[in-house]
Structures are given as structure tokens and as C-alpha cells.
Length: 363
Image (cartoon, rainbow, N blue to C red; front, side, top):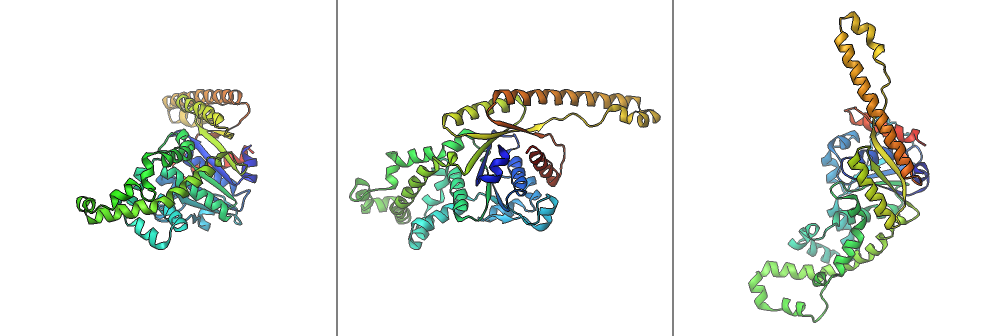
């Protein structure tokens, strides 16, 4: 169950299709977790501006920092976070994480030389899935450093959810492919011989030739490090200290994508702890009759009819959403199903507070 994961696990991975409110749910889960854990971190990949502002930061603040930023006391109070708990938010910065990897595997001189090359500058474009890979690297580093009791990882919205779980395998296959062997040339190969030809230097130009040689000579160590990590990361999702949950909405397209995701994770033996159905319409708390006397006294019979019509339509949507939730409980009978009510609030604090309160109530 979700509450058990919050109490006992180290990392909660939030996945799902686009447009289901995944990032908002991840943030709300982190807020809810502060009522059980003292040091909580939420790692977002591409947060909305409103979400960043709700945490008391601008997107520029998050993007410019490679390390998590702790929420201020004022923001904690606004989000009903216990005074003795801390919540930090981090926006993944792939370049920052990659720089840290270089510091671990290369000498300062090698790292400085590699980062000056144009090939390294475009490395993120050359390697598909590098952003997701650095997300794993960052979270596992936080777990190993023991700076946080609980970490919520919001998966990338720009990719299909399945791609996120395939990244370690895809990067490993790429690194081991024959084409990529060029990035780790052995001694006395045709490549090293070719690179020693003076005519090639004249053809490419001294600067490009020099940078290419530095890149190829130093990338071997980085490639070895990535391969080693991919072996470990391929087992990351099924570790006892990690939980995976899926976010969807009652919309048919989102439910169809959810079905495919659940099937995919089952095939990879990655257990889903919970499914959160977000933006679930609720029955209105008011009745048209509550406004009858006021509207009729003002000659507002037409307005009263409009209120009744709106009320009726909302009731129908709520009943349909309730039936959808119940069907999901039957279909995924071995998985906990939680729902978060639809919110029409505009203010970020209100949205996060309402969602986290709903998740806490479901305990």
C-alpha cells in the first residue's frame, strides 16, 4: 500500500502518461510524506511554472542549481508541512550530474580537457536517454549519501512512460554496439593509427583533430562507468527500497495508456504498489434549492434553472467517474487504487494542499 511505501521505502517512482498531472501528484506525495518522514526530497524532471512557484521558487532558481533546494518555513506552513520535517525540491540538471560522474572517473586534467571538446558539449544529443540515465544517477547518489529519508522521483513527461524503464538497457546496448566501440578505441587499432596521420589533422583542422583525440581517449573510462551503472540500474526498479506507482485519470485515453503500462511493467517484473486516478469529478456539495430563495427574490428564475442544469451535469460526471474508479478496482484487484478529486483551484498552494490531503486521507 502507498502508506506502507511512504513509511518504509527509500524511493517512490511516479510514472504515467502525459497530461495526467503526474508532476503535481509527485509533489503532493512528497508533501504527504513529510507527515511520516523527516527528510523528504522530490525530484522533478520538467516542472510546470506554477508548481515551481508553489514551492516558493522560480524555474530559474531550480534550473540554475544542481543540488536540491529546501522549502522556506513560510512555504512549509502554507503547505501544512510539520515544523520538524524538511522538504527539498530538485530539478534534474543532466550536465551537473554528468560533471559529477566525470569527477569520479577521470583526473581533473582529463575532466577539464573532455568538457572543453565540442563532442562532449553535444553528448546529450548523441546518447538517447541520457536525461533519464542521469535521473537514476542523481537519485541513487542521494540514497547512498543518506541525506534524505524518502525520495519521490517524477518521471520525464516528454517520453512515453515505458521508455523511462527501458533506458538502462538501451544505453547499455548502445555502449556495447560495434558503432560505439569507436568511442573506446583499443591500442594499435586502425582508429588510433588513423588518428595519428598528419594528413587527417590537416584535413580536419588542428582544433577539431585535437579535440576529437581528447574525446576518444578519455571517453573510454566514462563508457566503462556507464556500463557498470546500467547493470545496477536495470535492477533498480525491483529493489526492496524502491516502489513504483502509476498515475492516470478517468479519461478513456489515459486509462488505455495505463493498461499498456501495467502490462509492460508486469512483463519486466516491476511491481506497481498503487495506481492513483487523478482529477476524479466529485458530486457537488450544494443543491440548487440552497440558492432558490435568493435567486427567486431577485427574479432570477432563469439563473436558478442554469444552476440546476450545471448541478445535474456535474452529478452525471461524478457518477461516471465513480463507476470508472470501481471498474479499475475490479480490473487491477491486486493493486491499490486511490483517487484524487478534481480541483478547480488556480493557486498552486491550494492545488498541492488539496491533493496531498486527499492522499493522506486515503491511508
